[in-house]
Image (cartoon, rainbow, N blue to C red):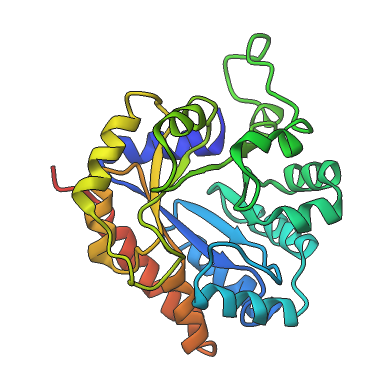
Length: 283
């Protein structure tokens, strides 16, 4: 059983949504970035999306774009990000998803990326610009667990081999393609809550419409459905957490790092703690 599966089982049993935090690795600099991420992992995140900066980010709003630019200037690379995962795994058991773009993965070499990411302890990858239909570009290098011949108890190899390709469904995804994505998904599905880019509030979330969409999607899959984009406050987390399996927050964390780099570690911890409390359901 993968760490993601274990995490969502745990949050379901505790009657709460999973808190998924996106943080750009390398912002404001490599050393302080790791300290912030390490602290956030211990403050209540259930799943970490470790953002690997790229010079031409896709779908990211201005806050994360600026964070990526600072991280690139600080010397952050995909290899550094994998090393972050290795160091985090020495202290934390939460699932870590490498959030990247296909260009850095391709430049490293996809097979090398998979081998090093898995060996470091990563649980999956999300490539914003690699469509679900092309996931084989990455996943053909992943060794699938042999559950038929596995022991009843989990083994280290069983856990390591559970590497997920996280797929996205946007408001513009038509029903036929949406259902195809759901049928081949595992780990969790990233449901984009509204049109536009990350952060900002130019496009408000239609909470009732979004909840109905998730009801429809659950007829097609049992994979956890997690909502992100435009979620920035504990109130947003509480609202989304009533019907989503997980809530994803990113730009709001990055804004803290941008505005208060010298005190970001404690400020992010305080913010994550508040968000984690908001994930609890009352019924």
